[in-house]
Image (cartoon, rainbow, N blue to C red; front, side):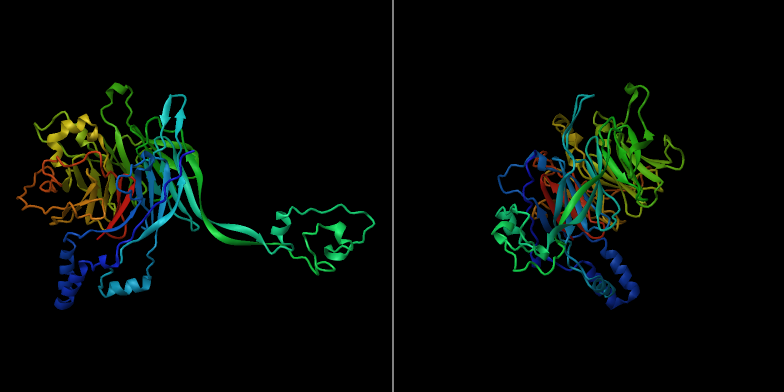
Length: 542
């Protein structure tokens, strides 16, 4: 049996840490200048860099405490409402958190009408946890299957229960978490604790003794043990026991197991907007499942060549469109993103659109394809844009413009001279995730040294903030130098930002490649980010 997970500590910020949002200044200016001026100032206020503050930490380790491998967080996901957060770890466990700062919706709407700032930030608490996956062994292939959770995806809720999908390298599980009342039998005719505790038994009686109604007996010494006392003449009436509910426990139940469908490791799963189907993705295939049917799946994308020696690229990630149930996108190890329409054919061999950025002539090297491999893609909430992360950059794509990304954000440009060292220690193969804000104005991704970057992606924004996953996120923040003039190429009509801010050290020497922030998620409704640093879950707000 695996040891139980250690108790999860959490901390709330001090009340003095709250502050008004930047929108307050825009609201005040609008009141003075009129309605038209108000909208203009508010639009400009959206481009101002956010001031990020520490909110909470779960599972923070003490100084000098060793981190157990099984406790390292490997997946983070908010649900659509933002009221619940799920994390998975390398030990196969799923931990759920719930939001505790309940707000009065009527009061909130009134404040929004008055353009008053809402300073309360999301607060979460530990809800429950369960063991999702166990280590397995494939005897046919002599392959060990580790219990590490690769991804978690929330499903539609029903009957006040939470539903989610979790996957390791080979098996997907559909979990339902709901409250279950603990029932207890009460209102007994006898004192149950005394009769059972004393080991009372009925004594043997002769057929000649006189019996009274309602359990009475004329011969008390021979009828019952002396530990059980009846009133004279017996009970006037018998009462039926009553079943009452006292405590409420959260119970996680596995509804379905989707196994033995993938020959290669599962790298991603994605729920469809129809709430009924989902996809699972490995290096060469994308399978379509129905939540209620675990005995069959449909192979909708297959890039496996007839001869494996001809294999040139693999699938790295896939995700459904947030609103169009017939559309999905998948990325490849060559840095391309393909948009698929499921209505075209049963096997989607042909893409409807492809998004890729062609390399400059003469710039190809041994590491070109390795650093071009896309590790994660995310649709914006409205489905208009796709955010992709490769080793060096973040790229924002407009699905209506396939000539190139609309914006490119430099994340690891300062590591380019160290690619040989990164290849030797396998760090060049790290898979960093990315995320977008719910309003689509900003994007974020992780880096080394437990750092993460936040970029503004609206036209004219120069926001490029570096934060550290600690109680003081701005501790290692540096100010951007004066930005040089930029020119747009005719091929990729996009902007490149973030390259001037090279992190803590312009040479990259101070970065610890053993501490990396791979997983993070943006709250769907507010400017709040949850990120994983080893076994600790940090949350920030702005």
